[in-house]
Length: 395
Image (cartoon, rainbow, N blue to C red):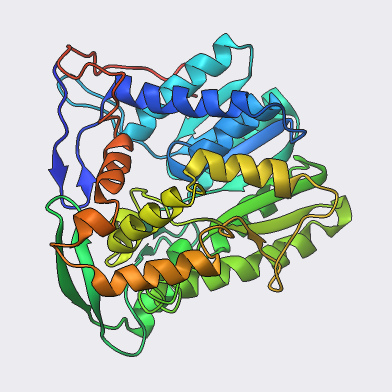
């Protein structure tokens, strides 16, 4: 079939298998170009099929020659209907990894559930024996609690007051004002239940109980802080409360791992175009301005560059650099004072008319469509594609 991008709001409802493969190949090539990383050898990635999770799996495999198990929740293809992009990403990754002689297997299901945890534990026992590193990179809007059965839904709302500011419709380029009503206490609790640290801790507890964690085991979850501009709707909003909880959970997990010399970290990453960030009002406009400034200064990074730097310059050093709150900061370039000053100045000038020249909306749109396997120069999109693609190591 001929596969074209079809968008609905902030998501694309089609994905291109060859384009997703190109996305993975580009990231693998980048990691290979940077040389070996003395990292972990057996790695579990929760949320392994897109964004930072995919970049973590690629960096582990092709930077450190690690055996990797990926857990994710993706839609498989059916005749005449494409899979979700994470399915095609994983198929491409596992094909290249297995051809290179690397162990790579995956589990597709609800990572919050007891069943998927049990399936993962069984696979580690049978194939790896133990793991040295677990990356936790889940970004789901909903979670069914494995004990209570209650279904929680996260929200993106300010707390206390209505938030009004500029945003951009990145499909049309229209800059407009948006107002978001404040969240309730229930919104906050629900968002913490979905995006906080409880499930991360559950994973570690289950794995430790089964003696599947190596001595000096590490686990990392990903977070974001961001600038003053996005603070009311992000870091000081409902999602920020969840990130606070996630970051506190790192200390709880580290305490749990004391007897094996293990450590839990939170890495604060850069603002990037992901399926999650595209849904957050204000963020697309901020990112389009940030991209412009960081590219002009030669310090722009995507997911793969961020994770390569996390692994090579932070996570596997004898002394892991952390901020006063105990977090690893690879948002350091984004948060540089000269970069933030320039973005703030451009923010004041941003309008539908000025954005094409002062921002990088084209870069934003390209990155958005890249998420779904579109807009790659190397791919002939007029050519027939086979939408039915299997994942070699799917359990």
